[in-house]
Length: 135
Image 1 (cartoon, rainbow, N blue to C red):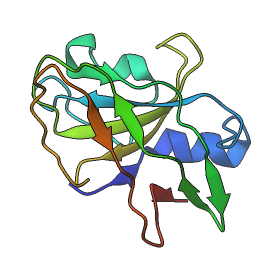
Image 2: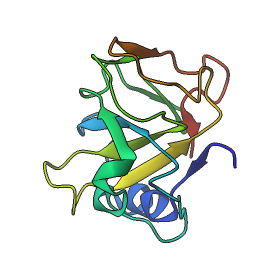
Image 3: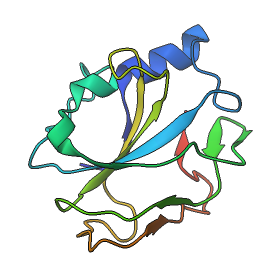
Image 4: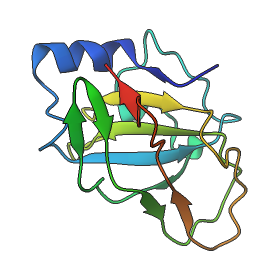
């Protein structure tokens, strides 16, 4: 698979329920042994089993939006332990996994898969024309 947007996440962007620049957007490292992505049907963070969520980041910072391209500062997952992570999922954090919309599934980022060793894991987003993702 390649980096893709969740269908219901795209719909939420188009309907105005996601504001990339002002909403709390987080990233979660995902273990594909415990989560099989379904880009057409998965909608909320609760669709990813707790066992599949290796570590969640703080909110993304310095988010940008230019010509439908989403960008942000690098993100650091602090003191990561647990299963190997093969993907990163971005989502809007509402404070409740059952209502936090999934936005983007990234499995071809540099450094993936990553095996946690108890230290920090830094993710530097793509600096090319599509940055994190393009709507």
